[in-house]
Amino acid sequence: MKKRFGILIMSMIMACTLAIPAGAVQQIDLVESDASTEHLIYDDGSISNATVADVDELMQKRTQAIFEGNEEKADMIMEEMMALGVRPSTQEEIDLFAAPQKFTSNESNGVASNGTMQLKRATQFVTTPYTSTVNGVTYNVKRIENVSSTSSNLYHKGVVAKKTTGNKAASAFGVCKALGTAAAGIANSTAGNALSVYSALSGTAAAVSSTAIIKDIEASYTYQVQEYCQFYSYKNASGSWVPFAVGSYADMTVTAVMLKLTPSGGVTSTLNNITKTYNNKLYTSYSHPTNKAANTTNLLKEYLNSYTFINRYRVLSTAIYSDGTNVVRNIGLVAPTTTSEIN
Image (cartoon, rainbow, N blue to C red):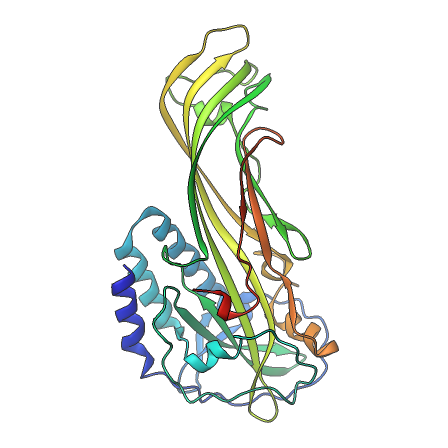
């Protein structure tokens, strides 16, 4: 897949241009819009019907294809993204975020790009050019994002065996859940409730009642975590691209294989490798999937209030738990603030 994707990226780079009209810069108020209102811009400057929300949905599907080892599907999804207006990032776009940002003015420190192709590396980047409108003013924005790859330092995988003692009802005895931390507090999660012993065994030959008291359970956990780092810049009145924010989120999947179960007062039984999958997305407020105040417009608004580069919307770590506070594995994430930290 890495080879095919590299060919796909390189075959499109030379056709990419960066001729996007400049947008005026002014103070902006909080706007309750979301990624479904941020339309992509084609190379010729025309506005696409596709939105950032469409790109995000495809990126999510591609991650699942990577987790499943379906390289052909992952490549097909990438082609769909390119058709919407996503393109390979240029090396200049990547280098714009290669060093820590200490910008204090929106009229300086920006750079123009001559479209040089990005260097070959384990992690490739794609650029989503789009518009973000505030109070009737349209801004030109670019989001540079890494593409999921099992060769990248933003991809994490491991296997852990864990025996958990609970002595509680099967419906309350947890098998798997994941929580995360962010640079500005606790990371949000899309997974909802934890996978319980009752739900994990339901519909199998080893099914138990929701009220059955379970002493302990043994399971093997295989996890995959893919970090995504998104770098934002906008075009100022002078025609330069100015970095204003970086954020990150993490997609993860945990495959739990139930091996042994001991009911309260009973005999341990060997389970027939009953397997359940737990999927989750850990994110911060800027990338909330439904919060309409979490969007590029308000990131830019925050930046324009102080002209201080924003980097606190990053997911720093995740922990996989079985029941309660029983930790299966703590996973520290890269959570980069620069592209130079990604390989």
